[in-house]
Amino acid sequence: MSVEHFTSDDASTWFQRLDQQIFLADVLAQDSGASISVGFARYGKGEKNPWKMTYDEALVITSGVFTVEGPSGSVTARAGEVIYLRSGAEVVYVADEDTELVYVTYPHWLAATESSAEAHRLHDFHEA
Image 1 (cartoon, rainbow, N blue to C red):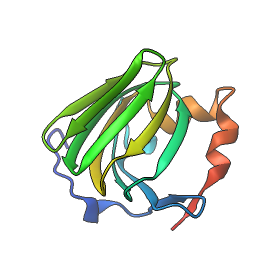
Image 2: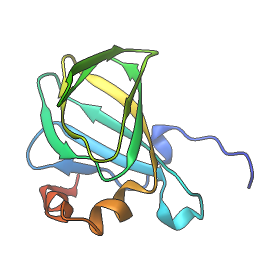
Image 3: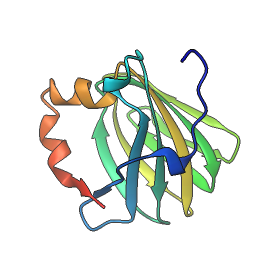
């Protein structure tokens, strides 16, 4: 289909980081045939997730306040705003409030991470 619509209810599997209130779910994954990934994330207030970008990512904040700490400083966005991250950046995702967001990545975040030196970070996630 050339035009699709997604909500967080379309996510078939949610993943949680360790015992934190961090949940991620793809709605457009690498098996979709699309060249990008799209998914939803929910972060509890105060939760943090260090990450090394192996793909480009846009974070569209739909509720809450979210900060990405990076090598050149911190960027904070609120509902209706976007944070863009470039591949190669070492960052820390931080939820300043309970936050929901949509992520869009190129290439597919999972494949890019699995085939990188950062693959070990995936072990922090389990089905919720």
